Image (cartoon, rainbow, N blue to C red; front, side):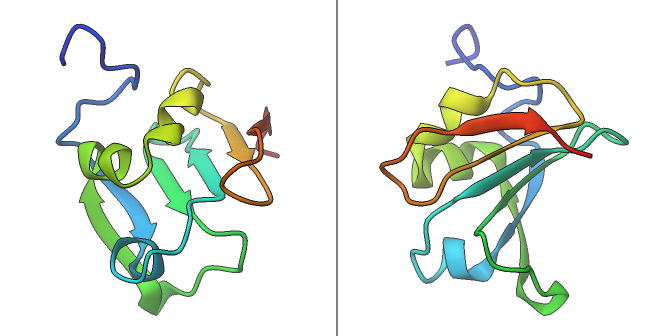
Length: 95
């Protein structure tokens, strides 16, 4: 998998997500590649609450939703979002 891993961070890299995604099956609809530390965030479209934050491995996120592999190429400082899991990702600079 190392040769085909599309993210700029390894599968065991810690990423930020929400308990609703990890434990309740909510879809990933918003992905942020942080400009400051090159970290990744996998969120819903709702405003995230600090108490809902979860830290998991990037590989676990890819297993939960393999469609995130489609946005692994965008650089730090960019984000992707979609309205529902079947929709295409819209990628834009994160202002």
